[in-house]
Image 1: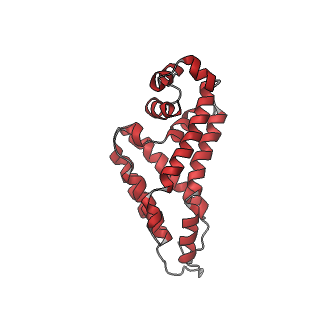
Image 2: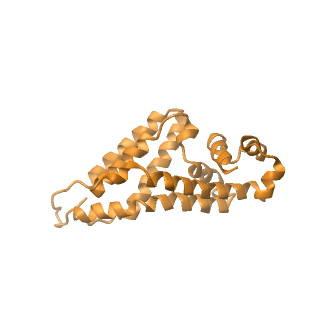
Image 3: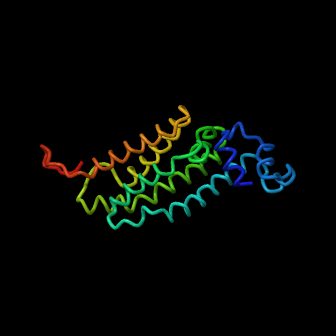
Length: 199
């Protein structure tokens, strides 16, 4: 049922997805559904948790971890995210991003589960960002945590643009801009008028 939720909600959205839709996709009866979940909201929370678990495994095995330099790992992560923007919209857009846009006010349990998934993934990028900052002597008002969260803001926004246009290319273009932005952040700059260095 969680796999069914992942497929149907990414295609139709949370509000438009009915329990009947989920049961049909999963090949179960309504009785079986309500045996496991007391409501559609409970299913939404479980689906967000399931998404976090499965995507964590997916990204842990991704090739961007193979680079020695932490900045190379960050940039390879962005390239990897771009490479998986392919196929039909429901195949590459984010389940928790889709749900939280609809349910942030009406279903706080779903909102919190989606937030845990999004920010939990962002946190996996922080060690590499912090290491890249340290290796390059970057001291700035922005932090590893804030840049990690910004990557997710760009990616979620890219998915929205792809949905608005029906075109994955616009999402890939946004990811290209994200990569350029990160490269600029880590470029050495001349001392400023106040003697500070770094971006």
